Length: 418
Ligand SMILES: [Ca+2]
Image (cartoon, rainbow, N blue to C red; front, side, top):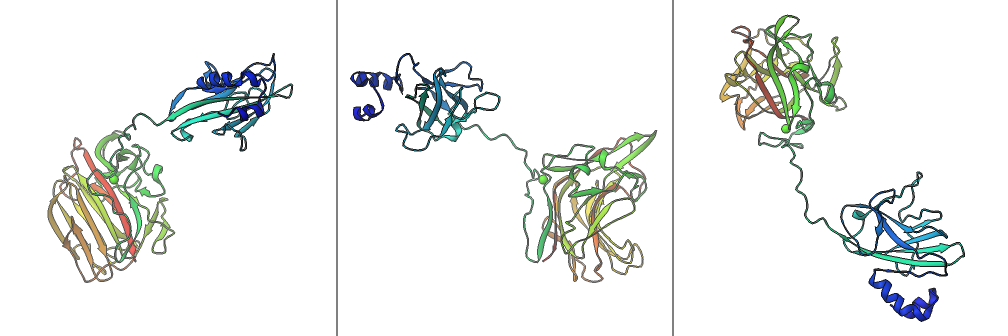
């Protein structure tokens, strides 16, 4: 500390060396410019109302923390210039407060102090300097140093649900020959009752006015479909509704982006908006409880609705207590049995990845990396829409009312031809 520099700004030179030592040891410097002007100091509170204030000098703050720094007292002060880490006040003030109370970070319109977030400061010692201009046109300089430290330990990140709990991550991005146009890893939870409304940009579903294929079940998305912890859950079960035991099933429908040139969209009389494309790649990660008399018939269905003429592509199809199969109803089909089909030995309770690659020359059904069916003739060649149709079995009667369980989907993805 140079006495010469102090001499420039202060009176009472004779006592300066001693005073400076005293003030420095307290972490602050200051000096009344004339009695009876008060000795100002820098105070700090942890509350915006400046309550329980303490001297700022010598304090240590652990990031992050909001503190409220101000000059006290306010008597006879008319304006305060605040500086941060600029004890010589050579730069521009950090803040100029022209009326009491005099707050380092400014004063809100309700009179409370604005916070200084020490998290915005470097991990270091810092000094706030205040030039207090008094009503007799003198200036008193006060400074206080304090220390900002890092958190003593970094808290562990909160446990986040695994978005893909099946163990196989959602495929992201284009593939050779394919352009990804739709993906859902089910990272957004949706409570039972809120599907598909809560995710209506990406999903629709057959409404509860639709019976399923066997007519033994009713599609009821609000009673069956939820999304939690990275999984779509279709809860297949029976409820008594209006006095009737009703087997509740699900047919969620991914909405491919209607803005994509490969995709067409249209709305049917029930109000559902469908999307379709001609050729494409569809990938699904799924498992199910082995529920008797329930099945998946996830499929591509012709936009024209003309069947069997325009074909049908089914994968994965099978009773949940059976094995996973694949079917292709051929273009220009003449009956329901005009089809190719194959069954794997895979069963539903474990996780599987089904990939369907539909091109003009082949329809490849790939289960867990292995092609199980790949017809190359009479491939459907008109636009088709995709439905994860999950329903009661087609033969053997209705499910038992007590049968209940879940079909889970970890992710789905769709691609257009590149
Ligand atoms: Ca997932």
